[in-house]
Image 1: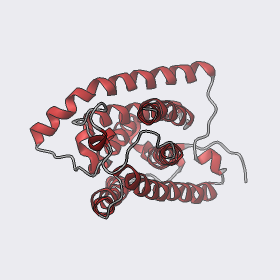
Image 2: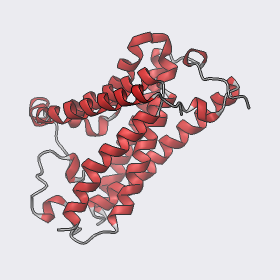
Image 3: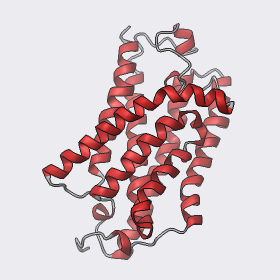
Image 4: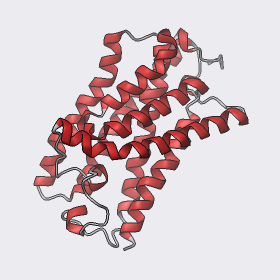
Length: 259
């Protein structure tokens, strides 16, 4: 296999219908998982956090596997290595630092958009199901009673959750960066500078199963899509995604578990 450089324009480009299908098929799967299977598991007596982790890992693994298989097939057809098609491109230090700065700014703006979530819920009439974990429900304070935060499971001392959530977050990062950006975004090259806008917007809408978070999702999605488009590398997204997921989710969970 040659190490020829991957050129975005040489891969099969997606039509408008193809774009919609590429995002909406996993979105439909997510809706089934989180709004049909998840509540069934919770109704059967499984704690919300455990049930959410199980179905989330299964769904994200499926998306990741699909992305890797599709890129492997394309790499073979194009005569390039799989790592090249996956956009494992090394960046000059200056460009890497600028990419990191953009991701940090995007993270700050996304947090700044969080106060818009509750007004959106009220304006549109959205409801957040009680089988969703507390960190996806902005109406629940992390300082609330344990039964409100985690029905059926006392989190204090529940350190076994850390590796489970670690696996969940890992699959979340890999699935989103490799399927939605590394596989899809190069296939939007024919749309030029609009490609990252299309990708970021569609990725935010992919989250139909948690649409109440749209104000935060759209800012974060456009930020990561732009950085990938600008750098042509998956590295900034992988590292930035890992860093902020650890800060937001893992450290928060550790503080609750530690009591």
